Length: 175
Ligand SMILES: CC(C)(COP(=O)(O)OP(=O)(O)OC[C@H]1O[C@@H](n2cnc3c(N)ncnc32)[C@H](O)[C@@H]1OP(=O)(O)O)[C@@H](O)C(=O)NCCC(=O)NCCS
Image 1: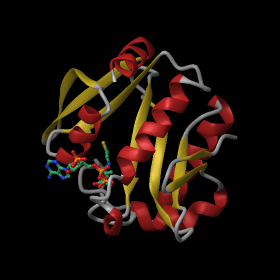
Image 2: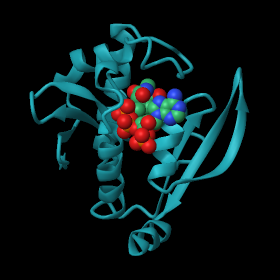
Image 3: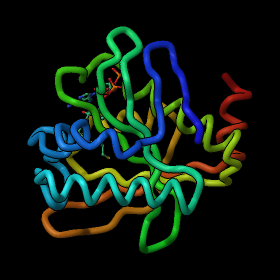
Image 4: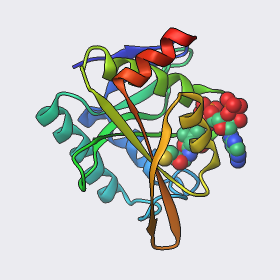
């Protein structure tokens, strides 16, 4: 299973050993402020982690833990899940609040997209961002994803961003 590296991060596929890290991330009220379920209990976090492990086994890609090279500490997660409604590969990322605002997620998402369109051979990826999640909108815009559709869900609007392999390659040629 593939580990990725960036300047400041190691991104390794989640394993069962990451349960405490997942509990810290999914139990944080700031991290879960835009999610439907909000803060998760230890049992709920374990179920989510199990789902990530199943995704890796069945599809050969999925969510990775973000670990800081400088300290070896867990900082967050970045990777893919599959959208139930459409079967599309969807980006997901979250960072523990002390690490926000340092460009770490942008760094992780860039490496994740490069891997998806490179080694994994995906043709298209999407990302679902809730209306008020401004930092997440900014990350998608910076990396060149465009809003493809929106949908009303209870209490908010979600924005579905997308980018194809061809669009990614064309943008890289321009830079
Ligand atoms: C969203 C999240 C992952 C961002 O992590 P991060 O490492 O701080 O993000 P980065 O530093 O790489 O980039 C954030 C960008 O958003 C911008 N930003 C941050 N807060 C913002 C706000 N309130 N309004 C507008 N832009 C904002 C930053 O300035 C930065 O853009 P820049 O590089 O042009 O300056 C983090 O806030 C988080 O974990 N949130 C909770 C989980 C979550 O919402 N996940 C996404 C689900 S779609």
